[in-house]
Each structure stands twice: as structure tokens, then as C-alpha cells.
Image (cartoon, rainbow, N blue to C red; front, top):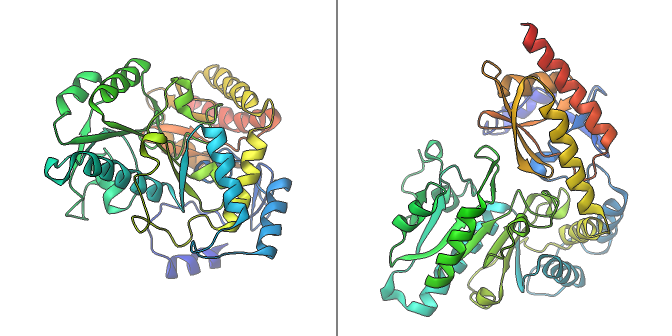
Length: 395
């Protein structure tokens, strides 16, 4: 392990705060390091390994596609991309999709669509290009998606940032005060993952949908972390009974392969034309094959209902722990707040030391386990956490 970490740090930029663990392989919801130590996975690669490690149907689909055709440019059609697009539009209820490689790229596409929609309809002189986003939001790490991100701590070093973004608190009055003749869209996460697993209120969502409909302002839903079944519905927007004009997806969509998607409702489905946007690897055949396996799995009867049940089980177990004061999120997107004196980052480190892979979000411990996780694995992982918390109580 030491030589791997030393070699890694010698050659790879230090842009991540890494744990001293070298993961070597995985089976289902269990990862193993290079010494054979096993870890229950409550993080799934930050919500990306939606079907765990080596899920049979996913692996077979990906390997079969690699043998057949690993890549071709988007000058040509492929059956696997057409099939994936059809399934994705059907399950999401959207009309068109643009494929890319990540959440940041999907959000960049959404931003371009929103601005071009207003340019086409209202003209260049209207200067209708401003996009409202929320404080504590996170939309990516490109210069433009960092500009859209409503976290001041991330707005440093890389000046000048892309103009045209306004950050507000998630309440109607703040939204109304931010609206101008230049506003073309609002971009939001229904649950702010990196911001602390914060659920937006139904009152706020319903209010902005009413106002935006009246003023022809587009609504962009960043579902990079909440989408593809994470909350127990395919899209978190379905909990609020709304349909944004644009929805972005990534992370879980291809089960661990790089894939992003920007979905458009009919209103925006023809905004981008030939030459307006592109991505060399977008819609890669292998990634689409993985995506097809993911969609087939999560659309099976009862699968999403099981996610809801597992989420409720997690919350019931967590709230029975004396050190836990609250649990946020929906389904298998879980944020855990501890009593004063318990530091989530410290608990995360101890979880890793004891064979449990977890995440943090601001001052919370965060769980994004594979959607296929079993109740037994949930129990085993929570037993590790509870033991750590009991030790904290004694210290």
C-alpha cells in the first residue's frame, strides 16, 4: 500500500483529500483493499456505483459492448445509444437528451440551452441571460459551473468567473427580489447534496414553478446526485409533482462509467442545433451499454419501492442512536447530524478505519449506498457506526 500511495502522490495532482486506503477490487456492496481488508460501501463512489461492484447484468452488457465496438465519433449512429436515449426519455418523461461525460458537462449544456432559448425568442438586445441559483448549491467544477455554484468558499483563485449568475436563499421572497428583465432561468437541486443534504421545501418549489410559468423563465433541475432512483423515484422532481424544463443527470446513470445527460422537455428540445454543442466521448457505446443495464434494473417492478423501504429503514435505525440528532434527505440519499461535540469528519475517518466507506457533506455524515444494498449489509454497516458513536459517548 505504501509504495502505491507514494507513487500516486508523486505523479498525480493533489486535488483530493484521500484516505490512506488502496481499493483493489469489489463484489456487490463490499470493496477490498490491496491487503484484502473488506469495506461495506455506503458511498458508492459518491453515488456512482448504483448497482454496486460487478453486478452481473451490468458487467455482461459492458463487456459485450467493449468486444463489439468501444467507441465511435458522433458523426455516426449506434444502436446502443439510440436504445439508451429511448429508454431514458421514456422513464424520465422527457422528449430529448444530450449525452456527455459528467454532471458538470450536463449542467454546462443546460446553461447553454437556457441562454440560447431566450436569445432565440427575445433577441440579443434583451440581454436575457441571467440564471438564478441557490446558496449552498453545487453544480460542478468548471469555471462556469463554479460560477453557478452558490458556495462562497469555492469562489476563489480562478477569476474572472463567468458572469450572469445570481445566488439567493431558497425562499420565494429572495427569488422575487432577484428577478429582473435579464433573468432567463433558475437552476436548483431538489436536495442539495454537497451543500449538506438539504431538502428544498414544497412551498418554495411550487412558488417558483408558478412564477416561472407566468414569466417564461426556464427551470433547470440539477439531479446529478438525486436522479436515477437515488430517492426512491427515478427523479427527485417526482416527489414534488413537477416537471422542470431541463433536467441534468450523471453519477448513477451508467453504474460507474463516465456518463452525463441533459434532458429537455418539448419547450427546449430544439434549442440546440447542429454545431451548437458537442462532446467527443458523449454517448460512448460502452457507457450507453452500462446505462441500459442500469435503467433495466431500476425500472423492474418493485425496485424503486425497495429503495424507499431501505431509506426508511436507515432513518429508523439512525434516529435510534443517541448521538444522532437529525436525518435529512430522501430514499438512499442520507445526511446525518450529530450532537454537539461529535465531528462528522472524525467519524468518517473512524468508519473507514473500521471497514465502512462513508462520505461527508458540510457538518454531516453522508450515505449514498448502492441502490442494490441489502438490509443485512445496512445492519452490518450501521453496527460499525453505532460502535464508533458509543465510543465517542464514553470519551
